[in-house]
Length: 315
Image (cartoon, rainbow, N blue to C red; front, side, top):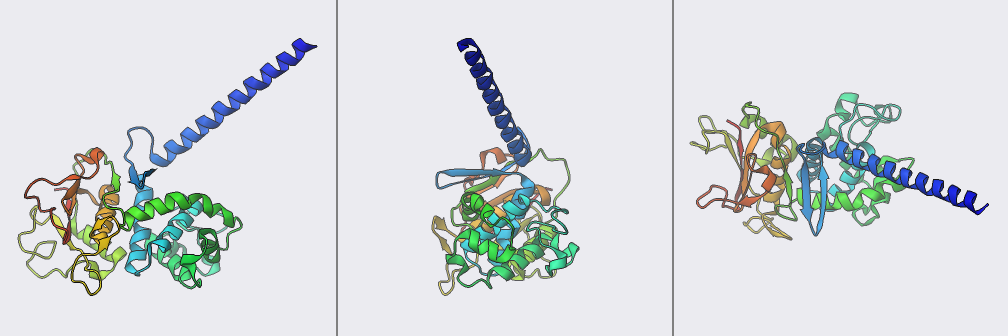
């Protein structure tokens, strides 16, 4: 009898062990799907003793969500709520399917008045519509994240947003520039295609608003100045002064919070927009050395100023 019990216990232990291994393998495969697998390009936030990794596609969408919030003058808390919502609804991917007619980053539904299918699958539009509804929630910034998100989304699983709050908060701290030089991406080897400063300018102004860049005068470089660095390949993006100070905004972690917001946005879009270098406030990110993240800019570099972010595209 005792032998039978021991045998059954042994089988039970082996079954439990096999299930544990299977769950670990599933978790590993999910992580690889999210980040792209070993050696694949990925983006990482390292701030406040924590880290969070995401695939380039997810990083682009997250940076867009943050930029649209910034363009509206919304606080970091609004960006955190929006990011956590998109993490739950779509995994920060602009998907063209979902429950019933749900689409896009926030799984908004055309039949519920969110817009057309084409509009909803435009990340800038989708983020803007989310913020439109969020700011109508009284005291949203003081509400628990699950409550604020649910007031907008009307989800059948409102508590599901809670599990994303730590990662969303960490990501928002980097993308809004509160924690400087905390967001970086590794980049695939250059495939020889050149970048287009005009494309960078167009995307910047669409996501941050027309005032993010100076107007380009006839006969000047793509950054609005004659003789732009890199033969017109470099955009010089001024850092907004804090209201009434005449000086660059001071974030909680260093100078130029808006500057780091722009710099992080550019790194997130580096693969898409063929950006090879981003420089700001004495530091630089380069595609060539992207695995090293933000490094100290060389002596005499045009990235040693906190007055502007410089974005250089591939030639």
